[in-house]
Length: 176
Image (cartoon, rainbow, N blue to C red; front, side, top):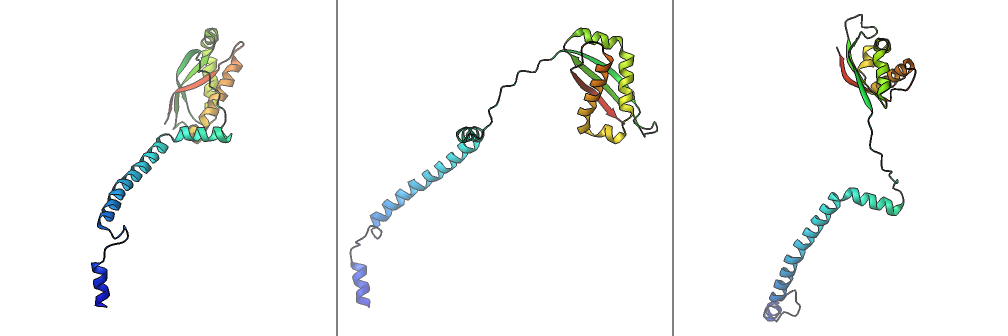
């Protein structure tokens, strides 16, 4: 047994794995290859992450699942008017709570705002009547404000004989 060990120890290496220079060449090859693979993977991941929205759009276009987006026309504004300091006691509050608001109105024509100004008392009264029927919980609910604006807009348009208010805005809305 000792003789066979001596033969193996004294024998010349026959495969590159056992060769000292072969190990050095493989190590050098691995030292270059592994960092290159890591840098490539990290770089590819970064590019995919930074370009994700564009990649999704391209994939949807290729697959035909993307919706074609129409360019929206820029929002055009008209003429504005504000009714300030409207104070309302909400329903079922027994006068202990109040809503103070200012309402902005937008229309395409300035002449319509002149009509609103001429009938300002009627418009204010209409707004107070609409909001006075709402409870504190209804007035505090942010999601219901769009419906409130629409209801007020329709009521104000009912007062006008010509033209209409296109948009309503709550420029101040304080519920105490």
